[in-house]
Amino acid sequence: MSSHLDTPVHYDHTVLFSDIQCLTKLKSRLSTSTAAVNGQLKVLQGWNRQHTLLCGTRSACDANNTVAHLKIEIEHTQDAFRRLMRKSNEYRKLLDSILTTRTNAALLLSITHMQTNINLHRATTDQMHTHTIELVRTAKEGHQDTMNVKTLAQIATLFLPATLIAVKNPFVCV
Image (cartoon, rainbow, N blue to C red; front, top):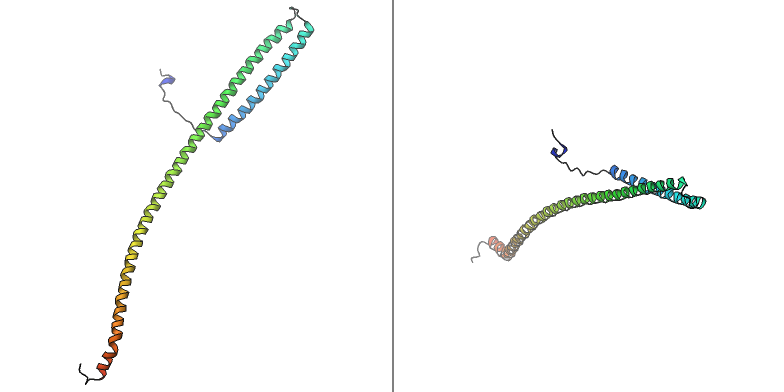
């Protein structure tokens, strides 16, 4: 023989938007019912006053006992509605806290994704910095080569006319 205590407990806190709407409707209905009960209580209190004025203090008047019993029942009903309203408010707060917790979890997930993307961008930036350093080194080497070619061009410019003259005039000995 198994009991309900033997079954594993499943905590399912899934809250749907329809559940929140149902709780809101319930709260509205409870407010309306409480207002109706309060109205009935006021009517009965007024009726009780009228009855007291009409009957006076005679104890033989049976309506007075009936009204007293009805008043007690209405007060009990009103207390029950108040308890239901408090429970409804507690459920609403619980749902708000569950939704807030889910929102915080989603926010943490978003932050984790952002941190991952930031780390990827940082790695890409480091690679680009390394490539830039290599490009600057290559540019400096190219500039040095250009300076060497320029120096050779200047030397060639100085010696080219003398070389041409020496080639055209074979009798000149240097």
